[in-house]
Image 1 (cartoon, rainbow, N blue to C red):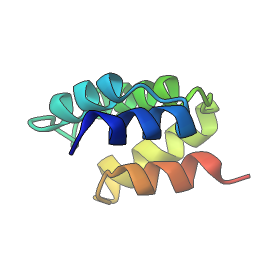
Image 2: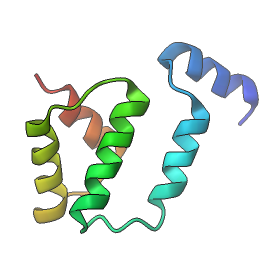
Image 3: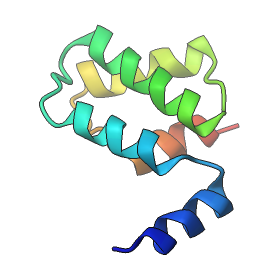
Length: 84
């Protein structure tokens, strides 16, 4: 993919692609059975997206991933964060 593609995404979303790539790299060997790791990922995604995640929502996401074994992906996180 070319640089213009990423610049277009950045301009539409306001999200720095460097931050996304750094997050993706950090997730490659992360232990998603570890509550602290999952909380750090949620907070990092929240920070990158510029959308705060209430403690109650964070707790639900953590429980769903750590205890219920749900897969962690950006789509799942996005849906959980955007629930009203």
